Length: 156
Image (cartoon, rainbow, N blue to C red; front, side):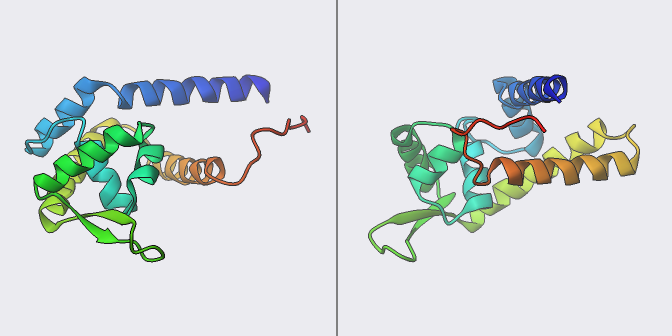
């Protein structure tokens, strides 16, 4: 199991590295046919996927400083791509939501991402793709779960 976990971690680092390359974001924005700073578009997509969402939670999910994300969300708002609404439980908390203009932009990014994904998986067996999607979704859910990272886990 130790070797498999190390290999899994190496693969996840390779995926994260590939996905975080500025050139990849620029190419995706270009293929989507949109004009948006590459630092802003992942936040716009995050707001569309997770919204309504507060800046602190968005920053946490994006792995960025909340003051930087706050400025970037304000920029998205000034571009008409994001709006703000009062929180459900605390009306003082303003949560970001995507506007129809922002949704049109994320739809264009999704279409470009699908074209890229179809090219990547063109030679894959459909069942392999289905298994990958199912297992990655399961892994993400477990990773996002309540596992206590402070407690050592004994090998079974």
